[in-house]
Length: 454
Image (tube, rainbow, N blue to C red; front, side, top):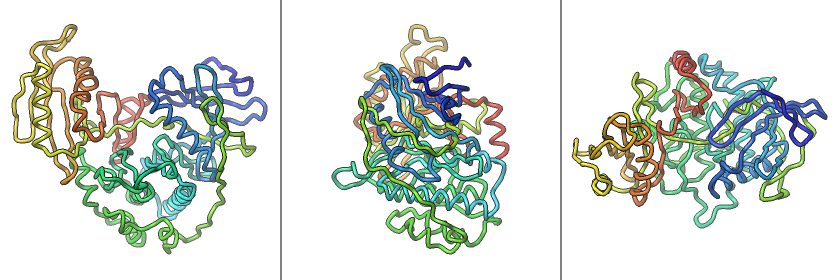
């Protein structure tokens, strides 16, 4: 890549990764020689006000939390067409890479868990909930210390109104707390604690506590906190996890209680964090002063674009095109709405089973390469208050199916959709640990990861 100078201060280097609307580059501060990670966002690609609000919120949160175990924001710069978020550059890779090689020894797992809890406790003390904690968002510096990153889904509690609860369903399926799925409002600090518990299980167990090939069955296990410990799991952290992975958030252990646990507190020293109360707003984007302390960051997973897709795609040779959403409506209402929509759009609608419909297009669309579009819609009731609806492409053109889902399905069923999760149609995959991949890994690498985990 051709090196470029940014603002006469940063010389850009190799591309570290790219996401939905941004690219992350390694760069060097020419004045100090310090390496940094620069996330470059094109304003024209941030098409909606909601996306801009998300970027501003992420910057605001990173500006607010300064802690030894949290990736540090250096500064934010902007031109008329681009936004540049400059962060510390961490060169130790993801914690996920360590776990992919096998479970960790108890002392190593405790160290990382202590650093994670310390960082999360500090975020909560500043009124910040992360909402997407997982090993892929935990990086390691050159000294092997943990750094929490990716605040794209974070929220500032002080900005909540009404009952003070959160209602947005977000996160990565395998790490998401059951109360988020219920769609009745949840305490973000409690859901973060649940995710921390899942991470601790992964560190000590070597695999996820909740796993299944299909999303609706995975959700059922999460709802019930249905998991088991392998024989090699140390007994003392078992007792701690049994207090964390509790489906009722009101009965779940608090972070303060976790820090008082005898297993957790062994050798633990509380690091000092610094919160920043005031921010300077420049042109609608927050800008921070650049701290003097050097640091490092691998920023591959900085862009957040969570899609809860069917995990079965990882275990099938032939990948299906699927889109998923959750609904609070009954199965009867959902099926009726889909039938009305299908007939309205000119599909021949037939019932496959009590909870599945088949929608067959009248004829192949212009330019369609694989005949008429045929779609199956299935409804799974995973709890009294939550249904998962899955649309699968049986035949027809991929582009036509994409347009059907994004332009017609979402619009015509918006009254019954609680949360649209998208699916493989958007190009997202979730690996065995629920990791999001943004076009940066080939099939051989994903296969190697799965082999290592099995």
